[in-house]
Length: 391
Ligand code: RFL
Ligand code: PHB
Image 1: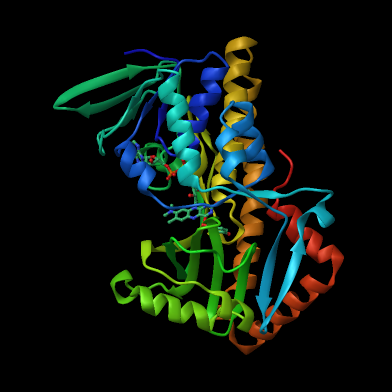
Image 2 (image 1 turned 30 degrees about the horizontal axis):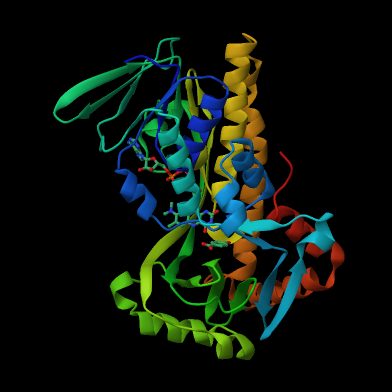
């Protein structure tokens, strides 16, 4: 088989890139390790910035998001028993975010890809291998149903997440990795119950961080900071709800509706960047190149901005016969990535109980939170990063 761009991975980065390339008239094939159902079964991000909303609109697949998504004009920070609202439109000149799950985005993208008749090869397992991306004729090989397949292409887009094959295919000396692993994880629970509040609540409590989020007005997503060593089996639904209650203010505690979990999992928290994001004709995008801790809700949005830049670079290559876009992709993308990394790291260490920071660390954190909610300048820094920096 032959195509222009092989995309490795059918997560949000790969699917979005596929649609953007299709719109630009660039042929692409996606090769995915898992089945479509498996990809759709992963519960992940929940908040879209304007950049991501615009991208879905540009692709003509934003209708369901506008119908079912929830526009949020702020978040609440809970500390020392009281909630403080950060008003996004007031602080950012009218900007808001949209609560619409990654699962729904993925669903809409898969539907659009199927409707356009674009090829996606699911369930290749760990068999995909990348070849000759240091030449102008790269190849992707994979095995499926007992047969070996080869796709010849002009470019490979590595959209295969943190554990994918793309970054791992780059010679060790060619890539520099920066990493911080946090000494705690997030225990997440999804339940078919009314959210405790109309807006997201980020809580810093003496029992640890908690987040009250949602997927709709009848479906809630909650998270608790837990020790990294905790096992999911040790957390019954009842234990989760009891602990969450203890991390809320009295009003929220009163309003909390509990119910059986639809999904429950523990995710580790990590900050990670690989530099550069281009190796000859192989380009990394999304989690394949960088990971942020979820506190700032930036992971999915960064994936969207990466592929926006990458699709423009490929379009420039084919339409204008110019390599300027692909040459600048890595530096341009990384500049945005590092800003989101900074914000996510800052918001994480501000909102969590940090086991190693001692009493002085605790007092400094409290002082910063007080300053943050009482200073318009400081609140603006949070608001403008949360709604997303301009492309
Ligand atoms: P994904 O979503 O990981 O998709 C990568 C795809 O590549 C496939 N793959 C392969 N395919 C072929 N061959 C191989 N060898 C392959 N190896 C892997 C995988 O099966 C998968 O389908 O990366 P992508 O597309 O870059 O999208 C990034 C986002 O998914 C990610 O940034 C966010 O979900 C991060 N994230 C969150 N972000 C937020 O903004 N808010 C959140 O609340 C939030 N929660 C989360 C998260 C990520 C989590 N992970 C990764 C464990 C919660 C979790 C649990
Ligand atoms: C979510 O709803 O899953 C979510 C929302 C905001 C975050 C992280 C996760 O910061």
